[in-house]
Length: 203
Image (cartoon, rainbow, N blue to C red):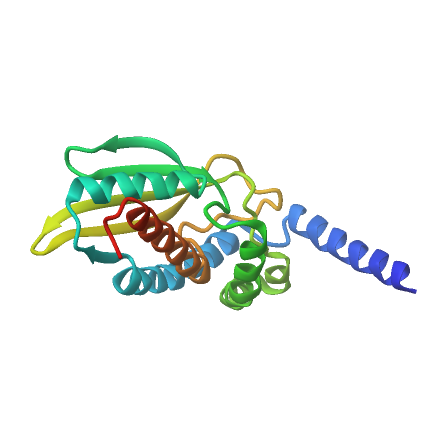
């Protein structure tokens, strides 16, 4: 019984995918759905960055930069460009890094209903086919360390860059899912502070 039910579900999904491929959802509808999701997620993204994307630490800028570099490397990020003299660091990694598979599933459980609800007015039932597809995406993080009164201000941003089209053919979002941004930032700050403590720069 369970096997038959699974086959029916697979057949239904296959039929819906075929319908999409046949043009039941137009390019304009896909574009409008993506725009709606991006606009909503941009608002959330900016709110989260304002609350969690900047912190100040009582350490020198060079110390903060070294700890930040080490933290992002330990989380699996690769350096794309860096300017230590001005405290700038740009890193990337295949999505969902810096999150692991389990954390990514939790993000999907939290944010997929939001995406589908935003897309549904534009693409109808096809919204139920939308999934988080990390394949072909890079997570790109820009971080800066800036000298301020009493220490160093550290700021972190997180965006997504497409390097290959998604398996479903649905348009990509420009902004990461809100829960993913929160989880990612929390993980980065925790590792950064661990690096500072290991270097004896933070209690």
